[in-house]
Image (cartoon, rainbow over the protein chains, first blue to last red):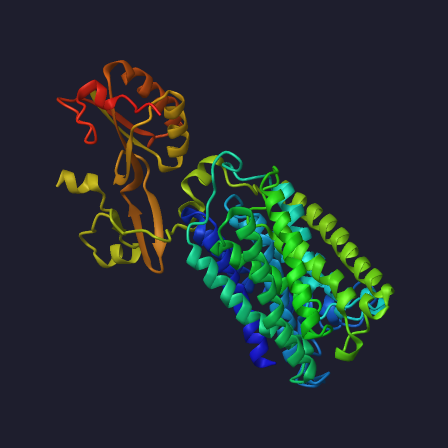
Length: 423
Length: 117
């Protein structure tokens, strides 16, 4: 479980590369920071309150306050692993879920309000939904199956991404210029590292090194393989060429789709599920890019449609012999209904609360980057750095301390071209 | 014939190209350049090192046009590249002695007239 926790944490930097490669070069640092910063802000808030609200005993709707500030979270066993480790493992899920939202907000949002949004979101949206499914809440009691977070992580993040993108508005250049990925190898690197980390995400969700973990591991290998194959075939049929960005997207969609089903379906079911899951997301991406909805990196199509398809197909392919309660194929149509309830409840709650939270932040802060700022790029304007700067024309600004040391004949604080010319 | 050299903001390139194509100016060369035009320098910090970036990324357009197209071209660039802030760039118009189209050997005005397709 220690290794699985580290693997899931790796998914957040992997997402940073995946998203970072998809944006323009002037915004790559901001985009990558949107993912990485989640490890800091959301990680700390998870320890302070998120874990307690998700997993402490409470009502069917929300956990209690028994574990605030990790009160009572020690090395005693929780299931088969130490409670502290369980808390950390779940924390890595909260971090990646919040980071996923950034895909619909890139290239136009100021950094402070973004951090405030995902941090508060992890408390008011992630923690309750996580409690519903895994913390002893009403969806878990209902019998909805979600092995590793199809609804909790992916549908949840996608609903928030959709709501936030609507509240934020599109990028300055959206629909007027082609906004192309600046580094496709980054996208492929990110997708590959996500896949690697996802073994910890899905197999680790068995919370033990047992048969269920083996099943989830194998399904995490072969379901995305099926999605990838179908995705390339769809690409080939539509444009005549299998694209690299398409392949990376197909991998992520397959991983998302198998997530809720990983420990409940057999390997052949997983392959069928992975293959089927390619279709709605593929169509969703094509449709979205023709609308005014600037879900810039297609969080809704990849994670929303992929997650919902996976959650529903879990209700179809779940096999009692492999550890799930049987699904539609085994004659248990009610399971499909339960899966639908879980998806719709998550969509509705996350969508509505995320939208309200985002609007509340726009009342107290300037959320959108101005036109000028978007034009110059968020890296230089918001972070004071360039990803691919040559260093030419950079003039050293001497620090205050060096000035004091240089007494009594102070150096000019700043050397500019103008100073040099005067000399 | 004139050679028009324009230095513009990179983020305005697409708008300028659109305006030029609309004005039926089709032949041009662009290059990415760095320069200094009196704008406020961006301050960047990398760990303990703080620097002022004196050189700013710009795009340079080189367009060879016949005399009748000079004003059209200037207007297109001026209106599309302008933001009103320091750093919008400059346009230089220079006389040209001779132009040759390599493929056909056409010279001067014929050489800067777009190929009919």
